[in-house]
Image 1 (cartoon, rainbow, N blue to C red):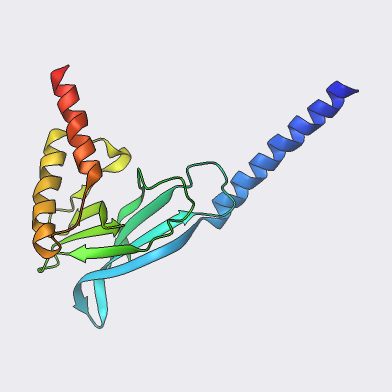
Image 2 (image 1 turned 90 degrees about the vertical axis):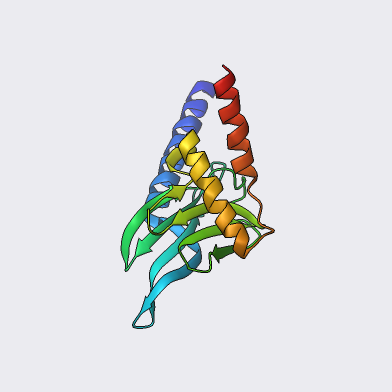
Length: 173
């Protein structure tokens, strides 16, 4: 009798988890921020950066946050997951967008910390997918950070420092 109850419970639990996953898939992501930037044509900016949180039906940690960049409504950078924002479903702080004076480089900040950098002319986005950071990517991000700091000197980028330490460790091995 006890084994039957346990089996029924396990099957019910698995079905509930599958249902939650399916609902999350169909409900998608909730948009929590949106920024327009770049050249303006007919009162519309060329680029749009959207930030999404997982649907409320997803309960597994860490409650991923995603971003995407669109150019005149077409996807330029498909939804990419942020790394290192935290375990909360939606950050309590607001995202802000910082651009260089020529609008060539944009950075998405959370708590004055850089979460993402994008250079419009080259299409370079830091960090790349899955945060697989190489030495050239790190150097490019450093150059872009210097240009952004000319506009906003107090921005921080702890993840760039962490990547540097990781790259140095790999070089020593």
